[in-house]
Image (cartoon, rainbow, N blue to C red; front, side, top):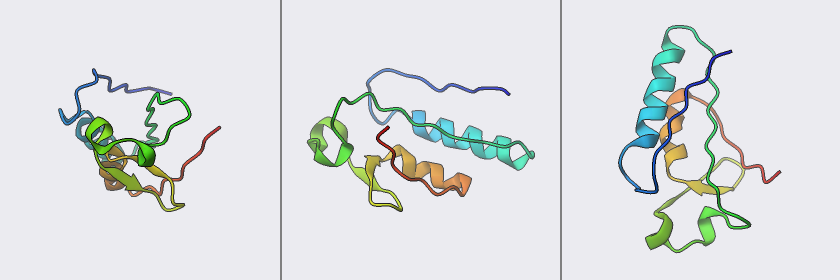
Length: 86
């Protein structure tokens, strides 16, 4: 098992999500199994209840969960996403 970690600071909109989803798509096209994990370290808050000026727009998942807009970019991997608060 190999891991690719895309990390960055708190600056929004610099392309971390695009890099992660593009890398995943390239790895998937050569036959590798790809699983994406997006971690937002908010305590007891979801993206839908935050001020859009603090967080940006939200993306609504198949199950109604509201998350960071970066997960919209992960649709390129043809994966369905659900929200888990465990």
